[in-house]
Image (cartoon, rainbow, N blue to C red; front, side, top):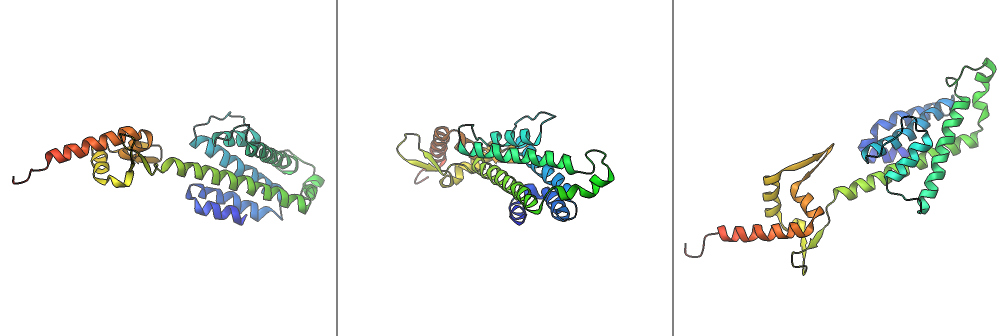
Length: 229
């Protein structure tokens, strides 16, 4: 679980998941059914957070498999991509974790005392390691894929073509215009994210950005006092 802990520490959004990680590690030897229950909840939480952040609706009765498949789809993986075929397999592992949890958990159904005592012995050590390692693989992949896409959304392109198409116009090269545009239109908030107006214009319509830069420069030049004034 150390790899998953490192990814969670790297991306603070996912810090609440450490609750599940702690529970899995505490129960993996003494009560594996409890570890499985928290592994299942961990995967569900990641999948639901991704779907929520990406605006992907979920059915109220979605299984672990359904949540994970929706999460992969929300990240933009189409059915034709190899990674989607792999993700479907990983999602199936998640579903099997949920089903196995139902089979051996002492709280999923009332059980005879002999079954309660023997429930952990139903899963050998090698299988336990495989299931928990699989949980880490799915969790780490989803978190990293999500964060990579969030970073790509947040970062504006480095440059756009100038209005006449002959030269590149860099965002950082127009600090005066950016300040003017941001003072005029402010920031736009979208949930927990906020972006300056100049970055939005630059990222969404480079030609309009270039035209406004030119108009600003010409206006600034017209307002400057002439020589000898």
